[in-house]
Amino acid sequence: MDYKEAGVDIEEGYRAVEKYRELLSSTASKAVLGGIGGFAGLFSLKDFSKTMEDPVLVSGTDGVGTKLEVAFRMKKYDTVGIDCVAMCVNDILCQGCQPLFFLDYIACGKLDAEIAAELVKGVAAGCRQAGMALLGGETAEMPGFYDEGKYDIAGFAVGIVDRKKIIDGQKIREGDALLGIASSGVHSNGFSLVRKLIPDLNEDFEKNPIGLALLEPTRIYVKGVLALLEEVEIRGMAHITGGGFYENIPRLGYLAKADSKLSAVIQLGSWKIPPIFDRIADGIKTAGGTPDINKLMFNTFNMGIGFVLALAPKDVKKAVALLEGQGYESWEIGRLEKTAGGVPVEGLRFE
Image (cartoon, rainbow, N blue to C red):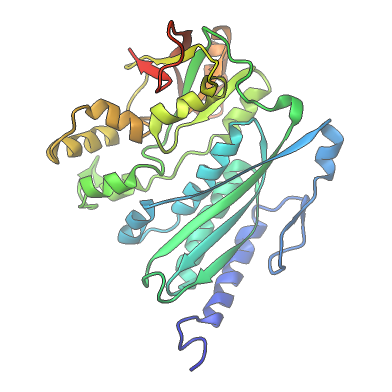
């Protein structure tokens, strides 16, 4: 018995790497040293050391989760790579950093170079959207561990920021406005619930199979937010990811501190909630409902807001215009206010 008979096709791995090569080069910059095939990726920080007093690296890692199951069933693999990049880079963006590079990890039961290349094609597209290099990665064929036809994908992003420009929420003040930037849909959270509520991915939804709407890739906010940072003081940022509004808006920074007397107040009706969330809520009702569907939805999904900024009220109009110029729709969705009894357990309320 050889390695191929045991389930690992080395030649298919070589084919996959050849397909990756061009995709990686499409994201490269002069800071990338060397190419694909080494034991590690190299990225020069020389230019940043000239422009930053105290450069700080910012890192984050994440995956796509069970949204992958939708991709398998729809046989569409070129968007979940974007999701993988977005989930990582939107997190590190919250500290005000410029993304530098990304590494991916793909695991499967039986490697198909064509499918793997489609996954990496999405990763490369996400990296280009974020202005970062796809520095390398790993493709692992693990027969007997993963079912044939199933893949997992995760990633790791690194960015850089001058220490004095780190956004940690320390400048947030009472009365600051909360600006919500539109999501592209469900993004990559809550799919363990979504898959139970929407078993038929070919169900008609706005004249297309609903599976395609669910596969709409997570929006990457780097371009708009970095441009905004040049013009407006952003005092805190939150990526509305797993845990929805309830878990992520209190993570703006200052709000998460035990000594804070501030709470987020969200104004329902101040932005457009995409129809896909109405369909999900209808599914919950059909499945028997829950005592508080509204809370479940806002505690699980982004509800049309993928990224939230805290800034001075006087800067809202300018920020909305600047973001619109970058192709990002946004709304003032709430404010920060003092609470008489300290911070509520949830850190926010709706009105």
